[in-house]
Image (cartoon, rainbow, N blue to C red; front, side, top):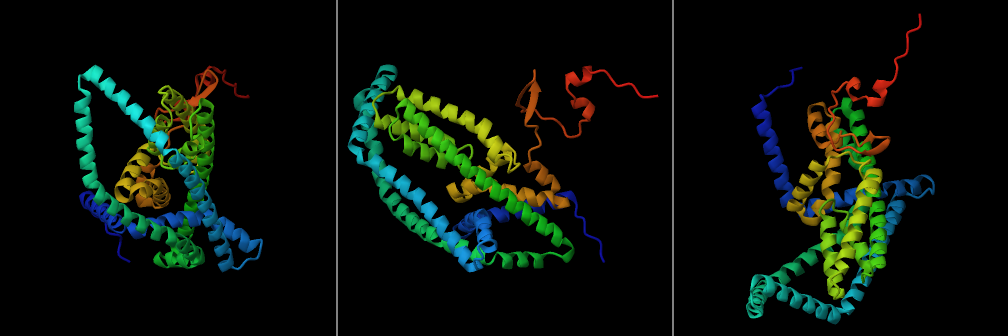
Length: 392
């Protein structure tokens, strides 16, 4: 057998860059097909244990178990959408009051600009009128694009249950196909990779769901305490937007402030909104994420942020949601292939989570090299302990 060819480093780097460009181009061009399939694949992994329970314990046929699981998923998802729609309808019923409050805030803002920057009210109004006219011109094209996008979204949502049912039915068929792609000697490694992928994705999505409900409850409770109107709606929206790491919470904060201002003329309500957001974020980042989410997927923050930005560029909001699960899948694959192991290490996170300071355990953000010897990492207290004498 001929030995494996070893290309020079520049050739390998060029092949890697060409492959990355080709994959990004394929993902961008085929996002209408690949994005729903990736989303459905994650959902299928999440509901797979329920289908397996029905098949093993309840003796359901595979087809019937898949149908029941898909119907349960559709009912739960439909319930969440109906609840949000019901809350939004209550918000829209107060549109006249919201518009009046918004006009008051605009007037106060114009007065502030006139007093501090010397721009007259007439000049500000003229600028607003010109901006409104330009917005109306582009609005017609935007309406047509929105209608086409809504139609495509409706078709995609209709196909999601069909895709999920077919993936659950043909999961063994797909696994057999993957086994046929690799040599027989690598089947055990392939099974280990698939098992780790299912474990990581399932636990990550379950942790993300638990985090969403807790963040929604805490935010709604905090808004209710400080007197924010539509506290329940804003809490649910915060929990849903929090599914997009790092970026979603900032969007939720802006939406909450805007909704609070339009529902009330009291500017001080912003302080209450910011206090609630800060408290909820502290609980989320220091308690929920380390215990529920980060322990399931060991991906560092740099790789997560870069992946979210690239996912948003390729597939919008859906791509931002799919970024971390896809990176987690790539890390599992890279860690178990010797030639790709450095890339798995690059995506991973080996920074120690905590350190002890005066008997208080705190988060650690400094890097500790894995090559350091144990003698260099022992605590100061351990160094002061007397050494045991050797028995003679």
